[in-house]
Amino acid sequence: MSITPLTFTGVSTFSTDFQTILTRAVSIAQVPVTAMQNQITDIQSQKVLASGLSSAISDLGTSLGNLASLGKNSGIVANSSNSSVVTATATGTPSAASYTISNVTSIARAASETSLKGYAGQRYSVAYTPLTGDASTPDTQSLTFTAIDSLGNPQTKTVALAGGLTGLDGAGAASAINSALQATGNSALMGIVATADSGTGTIQFSGNAASTFTVGFGAVTGVDNTGGFASVQNTVKTSAAAAVSTTGTLELNVGGTRKTIVLAAGKNNLAGLTDAINSLNLGVTASVLNTGTGGTPNYLTLSANQTGLTTLTLVDDPTNTATTLLTATNQGANTVFQINGANVTKPGTVVADVVPGLSFSFNGTTTGTQTVGISLSTDKSQLSSALSDLVAKYNVVSGQVNSQIGSGAGLLIGNPMINQARQALFSVMNSSGSGSSVQSLTDLGIELSNSGVMSLNSATLNALSNTQVGDAFKFLGDTVAGPAATQTRLAQFSDPTTGLIKAQEDQWDVADKRITNQVSALTDRINAMQTTLQSKLQIADSLLASLTSQQSILTSSISSLNLASGYTAKANA
Image 1 (spheres, rainbow, N blue to C red):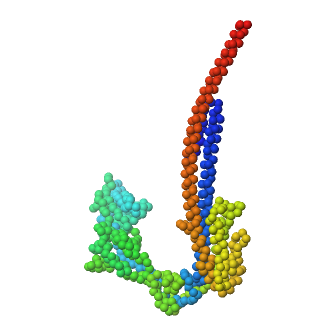
Image 2 (image 1 turned 30 degrees about the vertical axis):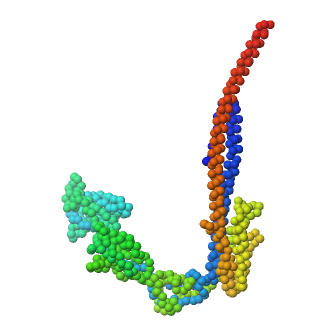
Image 3 (image 1 turned 180 degrees about the horizontal axis):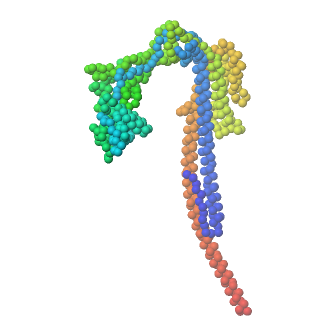
């Protein structure tokens, strides 16, 4: 709540003075409010600084964790002699070694089968008699198409066919219908296609498998109606999708798990079967393959959600005819290969459980006696990259900590967590090992300036011997005495739930709420005081105005008396 200054309106000559008194009283009363509002502003600023420090400390902890991981796997990287067949990644702590991959005869793929036959979408045929030519009274027939779009909304288009001078046969009528529906630009109506059959004298209307449509036929009033869709005038034809099951009962087999599917009334079609299969959650996805538009064959496709050799079948009327509905050309496949002569079969293209700490990703097969070499070796460049990241993350934390110390310190000056964070930084730099040629970060080229800025001396790092590089990884991987030992200590600051910084932020939130409530209460009292004081001043102003008026009357009376007394004295003389 804020304080709204009141304007004093008076009638006495002291009105301006009263306004000054009112304004002055409110200003004095606002002094503690302003002080508390400044405290709230400081708290918000402190929270921003603390949040930035928490994020920076978290990043430094992550960098130390990366150093530890690098140390544990000794900077081992995996290289492949033919990445088009297989690549490898060191994921744990493998030792320097080499492996030979051969006889990659199969790459894992998901099972995927298609229905053996196609199913018509919604369609039906009606007789059509050509509209004859007639210049004076052209033969005309109207057709109204209604299709349900993907949102479930009906879309309607009326098409008028006229015989004209030359007449209109089945092919011409079908062409005119298709042109009119395509011109709508509506996908639901565009999915309906008219096809003329010259041999039977019919026109067939068909639609996409996923939609329904109706066609209403009727004569146009006032013209010659000879020909056209005479047999079905003034009626509505509703399409129906082709049935997928003779009985409505099917059996799906996925990897040996069999499920019976019973299609409800009106669901014995591709759309209904697709929904039923997907609702089983058996690890396969069913969909409709549309090979074209307007009733051309539609196929059911089933695809396993995971790679690997499996069983994928669909049988109609399983207890009687047991008719197979799917192809059996792609029942999935495993990745099959040899490593150092040992046979391996896995269901996925990524194999991470053959060599501890090493993951293989297969991309292709080998031919003949072709082999792929996988070599594991130490990559010294990883050491430089990880140390450079440590330097960058350390300096961010150090900069924020140092900005809260000394004569130019910020709002966190004197806060215990600043001193504790500073001590944690010292621990990073002072970490040491024993019994090796690398016992500190200094041995790796890490230097610290007098102002607390960390840097990496690349010359020192590059001068390390192979033995020293090996010791460097051991030192970095030591979570007890190495620099990574400080990671746990840093987490005590940055943990979003139990961290020291989070605890401090919670205290600030409590103080913020308490002070905000105090400001609100004091503001209410000041507003009440201001209103009361204004009322009292209004009363005083009215009294002064009245007294001023009485004074004017008395002054005038005295002046009149004095004047009368002077006249009397002169007369007596």
